Each structure stands twice: as structure tokens, then as C-alpha cells.
Length: 229
Image (tube, rainbow, N blue to C red; front, side, top):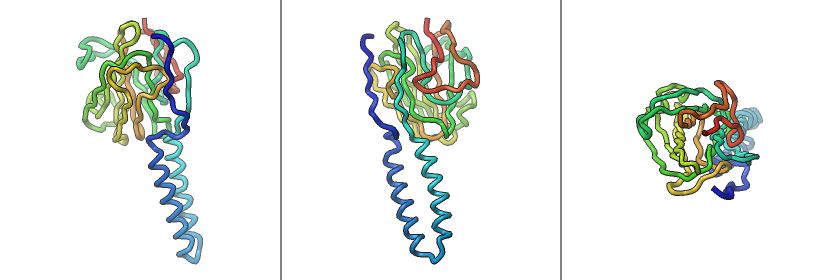
């Protein structure tokens, strides 16, 4: 497809969390100052600082955005679109778009994982579709079809259609998708972001070589999960 284009911004905190972290930090500081001056003892101040300070740093950890680049040739490779662990590797009947069998590889993200999502392959975005739904626990099989999700179909330079599905979970209630129909996309680019714990499914052609195993930890944009024919 020619020279790969890198559109990553040089950021350490994901843009989805910048406003929330800033406003919450201001609120914590203001309330802490009030508690320090309103009470004769500093106990309420320290209790508040410890509890809400830890909560703020947990949110900071959630919104961290590591700058990553895949080293090596990406031809035919499928990389993990998210940090997490492999929870599904199986052949399924995909009847919404393909109407045939597909190899599905699913990655579950806990609240402690980085929640940025990367494009798993180089190619061109064929379409983006958002579907409202339920909020089952993300690791359940029915979550892939019944939960709220966003589908991104990518056509590789070899003409293979790859479906990537961002799935909301019991806690995650917001899916952000940056992919745009008709745009070229590349490994190393952010495809989207899912708030709190959730899951990403990748639907691949039958005959694809699987390069991962069940329960294997994954690093988004780094771990090779499959090789296309």
C-alpha cells in the first residue's frame, strides 16, 4: 500500500480523558483546601486526600496513552487492537456481514488496561457502523452480538475484508470510534477508545494462521495475533 502514514499525536494522556482529569483535579484541590481550613483537625483533610487522590491516580492510569510503533513489515500481519487478554479463538458463523464462517479472536480489557484501540491491519476503511444494545458482561459469548458495539470493516491491500468490533461491557457505556469510511488506515494508528472494561473482536478469513493462545496477554499495536494467507 506504499509508505505507511503515522498520525499519532505525541501524547501520554489520551485526549478522551484530558478534560475529565483536569476538572476532577481542580475539584479535588478545591475541596481539599476547604477541608483543611474549615476543620480544626486535619483528619478530614487527609482522609479526603488519600481516598480521592488514589481515585484520581487510578483514572490517570486508565487514560494513559503509550506511544507505540510496530517494528517490522506489516504485510499479512494482524496485530492486537487492544491491551488485555485473549478470551476467544474460534470459528463462528458470521451472519450480519459475511454470511459465512469466520475466525473470531477476542480480547478482553480490564479497567486496569490501556483502553486506546489500534487498527489491527493496514488497509482502507470500508464502513463504520454503530449498533445500540445491551450491556452484558463483556467476556460472555452473547456480548459480541447483543451488546452495544461499533463495527469497522477494513479491506486489506490483498483484498481481504477484516471486521473489528468494539464492544461495550457491563461498565463501559461509551465507545469512541475515530475510523472514517473511505479513509486509509494503518497499524500504529488509533482506531478508537472504550471507557472502562470491555472487549474487541476481530473477524478473520478461515485459513488465517493463529499466532496467539487462550488467556495470552496482549499489547495493542505490538502483539501479533494472526497472519493472513
